[in-house]
Length: 392
Image 1 (cartoon, rainbow, N blue to C red):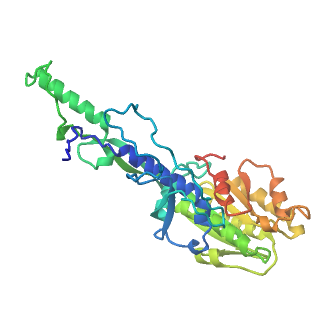
Image 2 (cartoon, rainbow, N blue to C red):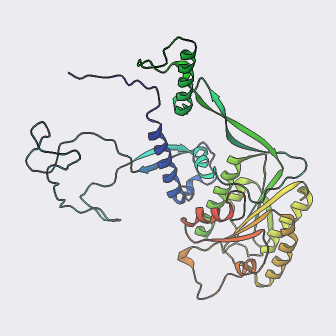
């Protein structure tokens, strides 16, 4: 007959398991983020779209019959066995594990899938990232949100139960009863937990009004930007867009696309528009300057720009790029240039990128460059621009 014994403590014994589970999900998202953001089907999608994330290394434990093929061994009285001793012999495997794109006949690594929305993915990815060099400006409008600890409560959900605080409340109650004579000080009777002892951590969303901010999305859409280049550029901007929307309220985003001419466009056109024209990069930077001068004065706004291009530019335009950047950078908190150069198209032995070389020769503490050659580089490039509110 089975005997069930009630555990005396009310402490949440599964809290550690949940924390390990949360960390595994976070690790799975970060390891697979290049596949997630580089899915062409999600570019431009809302935060409610759901994705299935494979989480490895989590097994459901259960008793199974042994496969050692040897004599069955028990561990009851009369057997000279010590705790932890391995009994029986492990059956040697004869199969072969599967290799990429090849079949195998051995068991693979166990994993399961969790379903998350884009908003939930953003919470895992961006919790430690901030816009670099953010300054206090007049006429504060931007609302940034953070979850802060705010004391304890006597009611709450089990995952937020504070074991240490609960134990202290129990001790306080016990000492009080001893002081008032309701309980003998040296009593051997157990002193069980009471509902009144429970203390739960309380969290509150703290909204903070900070200064105004505008983010410029600047993208090369010329004829030299082939399908793969556009795909990598849009994937980077898609990640940037969800970072801003998940971390900040009331931030302006201005979308600028350029080829031989520059255009201010809406969000949908930015992620879908293409062109067969030539490339004059200075027109895009000039339009950013004009929009700043007409709508976003640096004394009231934190100004950021993120620029993606394949590095091609009309040779005589590079001097104009330097001139426009000399006007642009003093107004800005940060300018990030991201060069997309798919590994299948790299031809370093023929030429260097004219626009990339131009940016690398501009010495300014608010300018940073990165390179994307494949979808695996998207998250790495993103991280070069954001690191705890400072330039990384």
